[in-house]
Image (cartoon, rainbow, N blue to C red):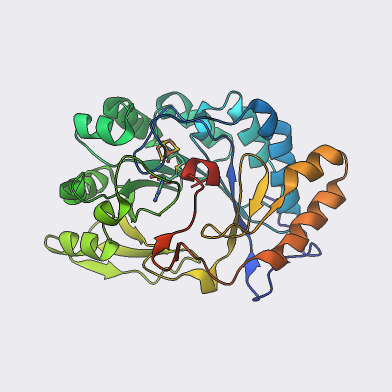
Length: 337
Ligand code: SAM
Ligand code: SF4
């Protein structure tokens, strides 16, 4: 992961002049949790034949890095429940030109995996945590064990990750009264925290999104009753805005894909576990990489060419809602959060 990318490699640039140097790669649609905002209680997962093999996932990652991508995030589903995922992570971590390898996890397997992930080249971890109350945690994840996740978080501390960030999705009437408790937990551990607005992905039987979505402006107001938040100069190309709290290394992020428009600086694309290259989280524009991989398994040049041409399909902005109605039926575990 140390050698610089070949300067002769073509950068991925879309029709609006945006450079794409960040890929989120979903390594499985499966998960040991069933978070209420992410999955239905009863989920049908993809048959194995439709899912990219570890080798195919590696080929996709390699092609993107050869096309100038600097940052890959592994996600899912829960990436750490895929068997032998560590072998994939080690191979991606060793790709010359890749500067950052990130992983988003629910933390359930971290106690076991944290040291090996760092060793394999993962530089930053995002760990989802919506509640510090065991019963509420169980209710929001439907199956999760808070103590197990907290042991995972503790196992990750001190491994030398550049940053660890807790991700909290705040829902009205469920965990909105834990906004400050979650922040204080992050402050105590010296890790970052991001509050994520729920996105309208997938049809949900469990709750009506219009009633439960809690805007980040409301979350920020709650925090500001106790802490002064100072906006950080740090600008990300995505939908996050970061703040600092005096005397603490903890960054407080607000990820507001729905209420704030971040599309003008978007630098990322996603690859689903079926090998669908999604050009935008809030649109259906996509290209089937699995077909290229399977019909031309040895043809790296064709794969790279398909990816480079796909940039022309990247839409100017997201469309989560059409006439106020959510229009996407993909679940987050399919999309790769
Ligand atoms: N299983 C891992 C985890 O939970 O961190 C990685 C995949 S998960 C889909 C990635 C992130 O997406 C998590 O932080 C989760 O809270 C968030 N997420 C899932 N569904 C969402 C939704 N409808 N709106 C906003 N965030 C969502
Ligand atoms: Fe699983 Fe992550 Fe979705 Fe929760 S948010 S159900 S942990 S994939």
